[in-house]
Image (cartoon, rainbow, N blue to C red; front, side, top):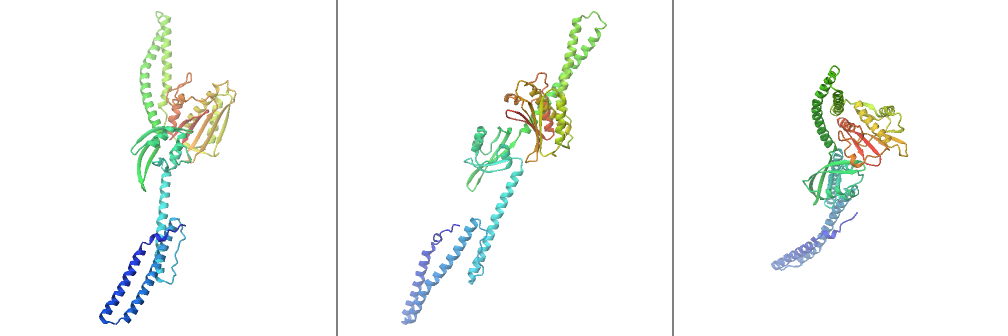
Length: 454
């Protein structure tokens, strides 16, 4: 513990010296006044000398007592500053004034300690509140040092330790530059990519000055789900319009072609070329109707009816069904469910469509690469994260999805497969959104889809 230099607290020494001189002068002035009046100086001189000798002693004693009190006060302040809660001054001294001062100091120390404890508790309380909200909070000073952050901010950024903005440079230098240059009042929307995937950030910036230090407060939100929802709703509206118009246009054509085809049986006048053309029109129209009907499924997903079911038995049924659908493809399934009794609350029928579609895509990807000198493998890993969300990861060692294609795989009707409809992943994403979760593709050499149920 560091005790402050008491000498720096005594500019009153000069004052005391002046006071002693003044009092001594006053005493001797009274002596000479009395001598001038009575011409009897012996008694006056005696008392003057006695007062002159006792006065410095009294003042010196008062000064010593004062120094002791100041030393106690400084000792108490240093103890509080160094979180020494065991400080206590004796309240059993013989001197009543010392007891009174010590008692007062003990009360002050107790009050200050309580205030400091309450301040620490309030800070912890606010930190707990910050960790409970779903918005990432970053507090930065003008040098880029992280003054405060919550768990959601660390999760969004994919970091475990975050002390300076420069740490983001190794992940995304563009984001580092934006966070460094943003100012109060800015509202930003930027994509951010890490090993967990791509996140679209909405950032709002405000500022505050605390203890003469300027700080910026950044509120980070993951708006992937909002963007996905708007995009899906737009595609649904477009699809409904397209299917309505196409059905209205194609239905009369197929109906008329069927009628004309029926007339050819009894009318030898119509040539074989006309009959063939009508058959082509009819088959094409019916194929187009079937094609439109498959797209209509994208806008007709029923409302989920969630219930509790065990993930382990559910995954086993999905794997067995995939084996049954593709018996000729050599694929090894690796299943990992942690814990064994992991339970999911969702619509089992709808989620089965998502999982079956992902397993089908994985098997087809492995099947399309027969020249690879490796056995086909599909890994399914289900677990619960720290936020108590259930995640199901489905990976395969087939050809990875190129980055330029990965950006479009969830867009309705987009497909790279010959004869594919391009609605499988779009429907899967919509089912996950209706179930309160999401589906993402992780970047990497292997193809890994993650189903997250919040």
